[in-house]
Image (tube, rainbow, N blue to C red):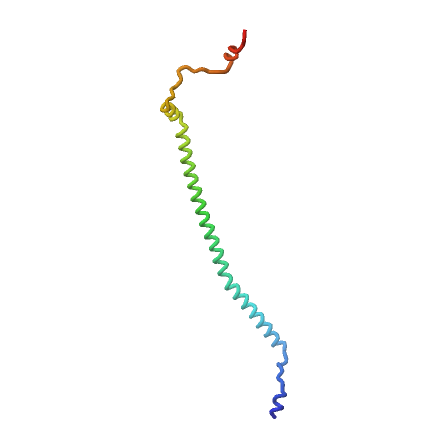
Length: 121
C-alpha cells in the first residue's frame, strides 16, 4: 500500500474562468500596491527637494538684493564726493593754497590779432 501512495501525483485543480479572474485581480492589486508604495516613498522626497530649491533661490535673491543696496549706497556716496571735489570754490581755494594767484592781465593767443602780427609788410 505504501507503494501505491507514492505513485499518486497531485495535480493542480482544473482552472476555471472564475479562478482566472481572481488571479488577474490579485496581480492587478499587487501591481497597484507596488506603484502606490513607490509613489508614497518617492513623493515626499520630491516635495522636500523642491522645497529646498525654493528656499535656496530665496536666499540667493536676498543676497543679491543686499548687494544691490550696497552698490546703490556706494554710488550715491561717490556721486556726492564727485560734486564736492569738482565745485569751483573748492578748486580756487586749492589753487590759492598751492601758491597760485589769479591772473591780473590775461593774454590770449590766437584769433585775428596774432595773424596780423605774423604778416610781413
